[in-house]
Amino acid sequence: MKNKIIATLLTAATLGSCTQNTTKNTPQNGEQCVLPDVPAVILDTDLGSSADDLFAMTMLYDAHRKGSVNLQAIMVNRDGIANLRVADIMNTYYGFDGLSIGKVHDAPQNTQIFIPYWQLAMPEDYPDTPKFKRTLSDAQLSQLPYAETLYRQILADAPDTSVVIFSVGFATNIGHLLVSKPDTISDLDGVSLVSKKVKALYIQGGHLSNYGDEPEYNLRLDPENALILINKWPRPIYFSPGETGERFDYVPENVTADQKANNLTDSPINYVYTHFDCNTGQKMWDACAVLQYLHPEFFELHGPVRYAIDNDMILHEQPGTSHYMTFTKTAQQDSVIMSYIRTSSTGGLSKQ
Image (cartoon, rainbow, N blue to C red; front, side, top):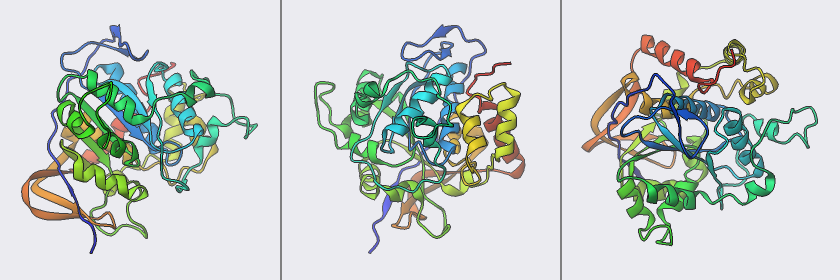
């Protein structure tokens, strides 16, 4: 019998935005204007394969600069120092060189790589690769905290129900957080800490129907921690299924045109899209998980239902409690969403 994963899906509030960048936020150098009740946000991502992760990052950089979020950390859930280097390169290029990074342990091994853009962080192995500026040395990267420790630190310091987490990769780090024990950081275990401090979790994962030859990628790569996440997570979860991001096709020629228009031809994103075959990675799966929080008005909430996910990572609608699922609305709305993704792809950083 197939295991069923029951997911809780609730609505999110629309946040305001700033028109001026007036102060600097302590954890990072990205300028941010001050707003009341600006949520702390964390991105948990499997950098180093599909390039949509990079746009999830730039959207949050952009939102931080506009003052609608307080970006606290990048948690890397794909193993390897190259992927930590990519996180550092991105943070450094976009002016977030003080942004915390958490590393994974006991990560899925031999994961499929769709676009090997982790090579941009390995100029010693690929001599034609430029040396992108970095903030952290390899020795410093090796000393980064494990993600669950960094999660515990951020959550322990946060006001109650104030932190929003985006998971656009494997469930490894979040699974480790949930099974963590009380320690010197907090006398709460992982589930209790999440229950007290987290507002919601946004996940890119799952499918609405049979989709391709294999189960959905993110959830199936670490099914043990995916089950821990779904079974133990005590706060609202919003799923962005594969079909949602599939509708938004940020093709390479548009990516490079947008980078050029903003004088960002020296950016990591421009390098990725000019040196690798990105025809499998320009679909905005991960970006949609972030976007449905930043702009819920772009999406339609369906319910009341609940969803179960089987071993094939197919979402099955079940009668029951008042839970919700997000879908995009119309073709016209799709155009608005794609325009927003393209506009925010510079991370609020234009060198015009």
